[in-house]
Image 1 (cartoon, rainbow, N blue to C red):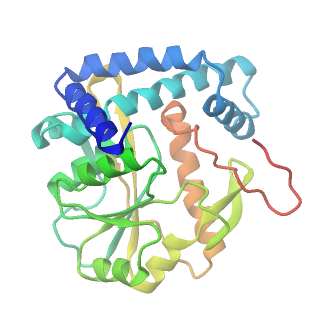
Image 2 (image 1 turned 180 degrees about the vertical axis):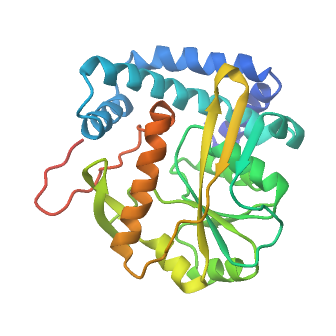
Length: 292
């Protein structure tokens, strides 16, 4: 099947989901997640491995419940892309609560890097912010060409400037210095280049140093934000925290550890909403065996 046909089919499916009541789509996503969780596969193996490494103090039964709930959130988030990518600005705004520790405005006195993390509602809160304020987003291109084409177009539909992760550092710095904030996520294993190994839940994790380097070069403050799926199918919450203190510190390893420690604390608040299906510990320090 040609890519154009697949694009049309996926686009049509998401458009259809965007027309359904939010609560219905959320429940369908949870039900589908429960069903797919029963099927052994690579993502379920990654999920269980991550939870075993990060929560060794939990029993097998506790980790099993957490794994099932996490998988439900992951699949639900995919179906909710319909609202996020094709729903109206008003529909997205109506489903969002905002709790910000900083004064949000179109332009900032200081360059700003919004540091996000892969929780289930990250897509929703980023779309919401782009409705309200100019923003640029550093994104990782998807391996599937069909999904990549749709996601890039739909994420930019409210004016977001999309910058690929391997794009020009000069372009990124120019955006920051222009007064437009940049959103990025740095909680995945993107390879050994510009990364260091620091603990994450007590496990050495390959962690990007790009955030502290960009902050150093641009003079930007680094403002973390977290997304939350609200109970009762009410929608989402965007929590924006104060800028990380003394960041960058001049020590990229210390900065990477500070990011991981902040993320750990937030994960412990809603552990089932984090994307544990990513291979966070894909690369290991020299001499350590693979975990997956």
